[in-house]
Image 1 (cartoon, rainbow, N blue to C red):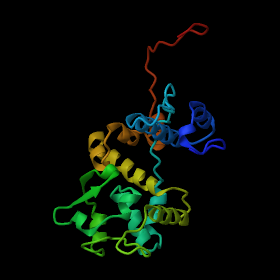
Image 2: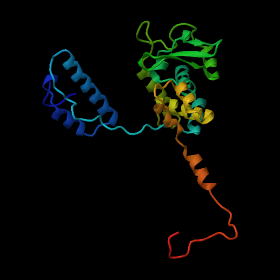
Image 3: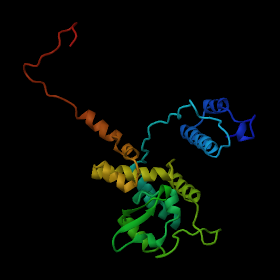
Image 4: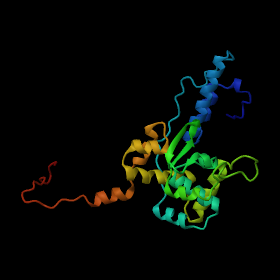
Length: 252
């Protein structure tokens, strides 16, 4: 945390924290800093280095409920038909069909995929390793990829893979090339939303996305606008003889 008045973290006070949190910032930014300060407090106490109590009495900043942000089917079709570079096309398919995050795409290795069994082993958030089925589109992609080692080696760092930022920027550029202002993670949202509508089982979707908490998967159960609109249009009754109608001027 940077402030105009403080350069030494040991001189921070709760007033500094409250002032910083009161400024207009993204909710997740506030939560991240609040958690860091709480951990800093605990570290100071554990090693008898001080007792600043920077977050004492300050509740965790509120964050909005997560929502899925899938792109339209038209945008997906345009993206899959677009003339993209080999890497960009691969990034897009791994996010859309395999539901991989950008950092998982960046570090994918050939030996993670068991094509004979049809499963991929993914090292996700927090280093948690879980298997997921390989989509047929990714099976086809794997035919042109190395059987061992990085699929996307870094062009500037020896024995390393491309960065997650590179993947994110490349996918973002591909989306903009077809007139869609979206992010790489929205491709994961798009695939996950379609998956949930197909299986209609949130626990299966949780396993597919490798979410630790079921709550993280619940955003993919949101009703889409088309379904909502069709439901409203289908809402009607045929008049039946003998129906009771409210008397004018009286509450029904």
